[in-house]
Length: 307
Image (cartoon, rainbow, N blue to C red; front, side, top):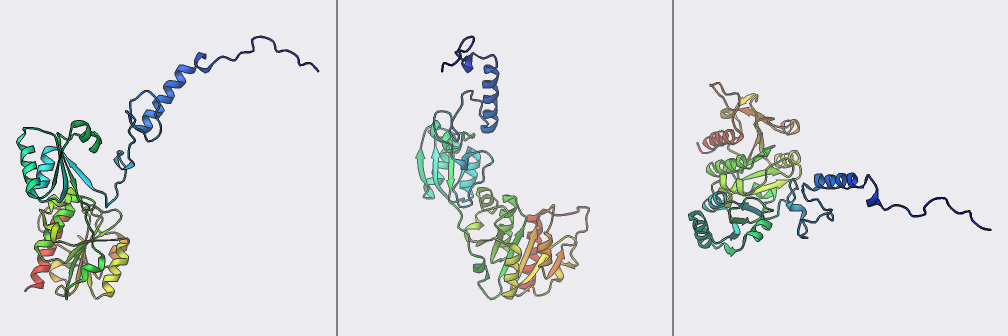
């Protein structure tokens, strides 16, 4: 049986010959550029970078860096300040330069036993994910966190627990005050909290080297565990019913809980405190920075514990 022949031409026009093809290619390129943040017009494989080098997920803007991953400080002033404050580095990457800050950074790193690696601009661009490095970058050692039970050592430990402190500089300032006033260690929740990074190291003025910092998965559960171990838990709260100077049991095993400046202590943490205490203020300020408030409270606790 013979099939009927088709009328007209039997060849289908190619896509690139269609009137809509140019608009479709432009739309597709724009969509890919918005996803990757790139202005490259050609299509790329997912996860690839211009030049064919694969982009690691930890280098992508907005990606979550593992807490135990090495941190890279870049820029002449940030690197030099980090080295001056004793931030523990593993490698200093530098470009040959006559700048005085670069020479000083190399000298401090060499004196501190930090490895020196001279490299070119392309390598530093890759290491810093094309950030402004000014020919200098410092790789910082991952911080080794303690176990929460390690903070209970001694007959009357003084532990500072932080609830919602997300600024690394506040964390570093609290560590510095805790070291000055004899605290046993710092407790951080794993989520919604600053971690020990170069910013915290710098603000702590090197005191992190001798201050144990522990992390827990659930802050309220760990506070309950400390209470079961015999600790008195006091929350620092602007509306607390007691003054920081009138806290009982300050000379025994003690946990001071410090919340964020804006939100204060969370509801669950508040419910797990034995007492809420405030810092009396006689001026016009409504609140104190979390780092300053922690320093004042720790001074008062140290006074009571050593009087």
